[in-house]
Structure formats: C-alpha cells, structure tokens
Length: 381
Image (cartoon, rainbow, N blue to C red; front, side):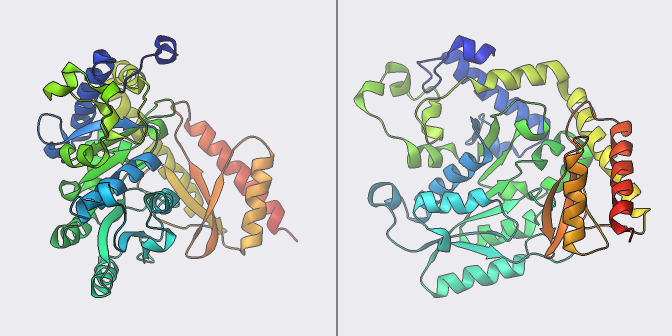
C-alpha cells in the first residue's frame, strides 16, 4: 500500500535514488541472512535485484546465458545456432516458457531424468545429454537446477551439477522459488550446498517468507554479464549519474524498463520479523509438516509418496488414482481445507502445503481427521 501510494518509478538511480539504494542494501541483507556465497553480494562482482516472479528470473538468466554462450553475438544478431537448455523432468514450466520467449523453442529444452527415489536430477543423465548435443553441433547454454521442485520439493544435487557446468562452461541457474526461504535456518542450508557454482540464483519471498506477491529475489555472480546482455540506452534515458558509472540502474537487470518500489515491502517484513522471527516461521512449517507426515505413516491405508524436507507433504491412499482423486475432491468440497495434487512416479498424489504463520497443530490435526474420515467413507463398500 505504501509503495503504490508513493508511486515511485525505480527504473534508474536518477528517477529514485532511495528505491535503488534500498534495494541494493536489502538484497545484500537477504544474501547474508541466507548465507549465500560472497560472489552474489554487491560489494563484489555480483549483486541482487527484485524481479516480479521466479519465471522472470529464469527468463533473464536464460537471456544472459545465451549472451555468454554466443560470445556476445546473441545481443546483436539473435539466435545463430542451436542452443540448448537443460532441467529435470520436474523443472518448472517457466523454464520451457523462457526457452520459447528466448527463441530456443520448446524442443530446445532437454528434460533430464530424475532418480526414482529422490525425484532429483541425475547428473550422469545431464552429462550424457550435454555430450550428445555437443556431438550434434549444438551449444549447451544453460542448466536450470532446482532446490525444492514444485511437485515434491525435491532438491537437485547442485554440487555435482555445478561441477559439470563448470567443466563445460555452461551457465548454471538455481531456482529455489519455494524452498529458498528455508536457508534462513542454518540447519536447512544443506539444501543449498554447491551454490558457489551458480551463475544466478533466485527464490520468492512471496511464497514462504511472509511477503506479499509479487517479489522474487534474484542474484547474479557477475552483474556485468547481465547488464551487457540486457542494456539498451536511448538518448532520453541518459543522465549524469548513469554516465558516471557510479550507480546501479536496475532497468538493465530485467526485461521491462519501468519498475515498482518492491524493496519497500520486503524491508517491512525483515524489519518486523527479524532473523529470529523468520526462522521461527520456517521451523514451524517444517515441524507441522512432519507432524502431518507421521499421521499419514501411522495409518496403513495411506502412504507418504516422497521425501518432505520442507513444509510440503506428498501422500496418497493405497488405492487407485480414481479413489485418490475422489478423496481430494471430497475434502476440498468441505471448504475446511484446500489440498492440491501432482503425480509422483506416474501415480495421482495429494499435496499438503503449510505456509501460513497462523497454522497450528489444531489445523493439522483437524485436516488429518477430515482426510481419514473421508477415506473411510470412500473405501467402505
């Protein structure tokens, strides 16, 4: 509300020094809070910027990757060869959309197989795909690894993936849209192992860090590469501050020219909750998810369908897909809970996601009672 009321235009430092400088400082604060690698800080070669969503972050990373992979030709002459993007079969749909927008087409995305037990990308399969494309004369441009996939919150093996990207000179973008918030807790930072390999990284404070939509935190290890790929400077935008090279113009870090004062709402969240408050929120979600998973495991009619390192639990009845779909429809129809679904290993699977700071054990227990009672009704002849 404050940001909208102020009506700040933050495209250039000159149009709003306060908006620009708060965003720079705030993104360094956030990087410190998550213990991100030093290479993402504005005090070095990198830096952070707020995008509207992880989808935009993936697109921007793809464009920067194409600029690098083409040796700078992409910016002037466009797509001149067959470039490839790689992600797991559980990678977000925005990766394919980014490839389409960037001119690679849907066929330019290689979907890499995952481990059937962990649902995480298989490094050996990634290497095989890269080598096959190189043999065919194609250019591997970007790998998008995921920390907390949408379906199951699986964590791709970033250290192994990063080493492969370093070996072949491929841009590594790490999408932690949902699960990145977990890194505010030291005991959950194992999920970010290997991040020192990443050329870019993002997560959405608007998902699990109590910030209103839209707010994606996006960092790059080398801001010069990003700016070189995206900058366009018409005469009407020239000004003394920009020409000096001493300021940041965030218009060069995103697709649109104009931008809102998104940093302000994130500033409010960090100042209100503090590190301890945000950690308590994340830990509560993880604890409640484990409580729910224990209830599922204790009932022989149900099974937990995937690991649940964060605050999402995938589960299903030990029954066919139609029965599980009926269970989901029935409990949602009560209006007391709202669950979603996915497919794990091809099977229809229900998802319990916990994210509200007002969710308590009572809510979890009531949800389980509803599920168990409804399942009894469905399974009774």
